[in-house]
Image (cartoon, rainbow, N blue to C red; front, side):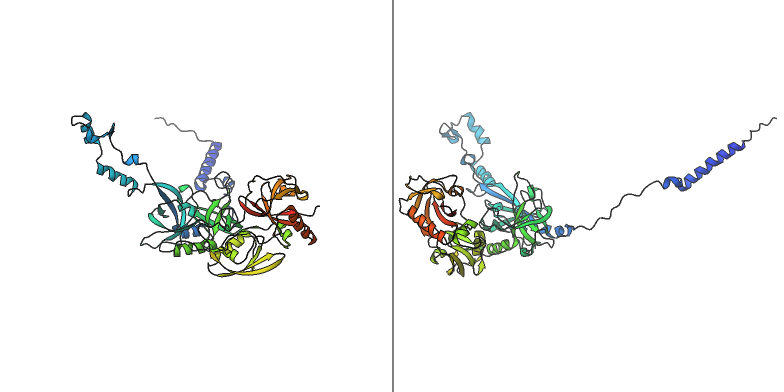
Length: 517
């Protein structure tokens, strides 16, 4: 029996095998060789500075903010509800008994009661019309028992109102009152639950640059939150006589109307009302009604359903630098009286055209809108002290504030240019002013017959057919009268004279330079 012996491995083979086995042991125990592990860098982490979060504010106020859905009744033509089967002037009942259509209409034509029932289902009680969607905006609760605030332009044409809560619950609401002059409205939800509500802030403490959060229902998407800062205060956008908007740069879009803008304490600093947008979308310029304005109006609407405002009853316009100089005023402040309305508190107190209201109850008046807001805030029937600049000196009159009629013209600046009437050529000219005038047919003032377009009069918008009824508050009936007043003004050292211009749209004042000639 022979034995086969395996060859003994060489020393080189043994060393090689041992080395590989040792390396494998190292890999199994450590995972990677030491030099490989050290080549991996740690993930980048940056310690950012703390930034304000709006989450706590949003969590607290969101249940108080709602979506407001508005419907209006629209009449449908009577043909749809009073359909009859008419065959050449004869009705269904007049068809012969053996007529093939009698059986058809007996089986398929709606009975009279069925038609009436469906009519009521579509329209509600007879004559009211069908409810159709009209608008959708935002609002917010201000009391625990269900009073909420929104914009007047959201609900103004509505017949039925639905409030959609943050959790999706839909509740019917009724209109308590609305005010078109400030674009505010109050709705009431009658429900046994206690509503989460928010309060108005003291917006006098709001500063440009403060953080704000706008909550609402843009584009009907549901509760949406955007943030920004107060960009400006006291904005006048020409929407009404009491414009005093906060401007914010938070993203506000269609459907945000009536929604609140909060400070970081969860208080309402403003009510979103309008945006400036060439495209119709958000461009970072939104306007909110200040809380101080909204609070007083809302309180009145809840109490009385309407807003009672003080009334002076005078048409006013701004005092420009030229007008101030023509009247001898040191500053271009106050409100220039164009015309007091007949029977108004202003007229009864002796306020005249050409007077400048410089102060109300001892507080200086900045401009016409300042006067309009402050007069409106006074209680009708109360007494006010009005300081006037008249004839180069200051005078004071006391008067009783009236109640602004609902159909009265707002106490707002006179704007716009008048359309010319047909004028007659005149022989006399005020060449230095660029005017040709002739006595008016009614004996009141002088009619402008022509205007040099390159003159100061042309630059300031005077037109043929308009009348000059006074200069520096002195009545004129001829060109000589005008020149006489101008010469007296020159002797007093004035470089401009104040012309009262009367046109179809009303009166206005224009200051013209008189230093030449």
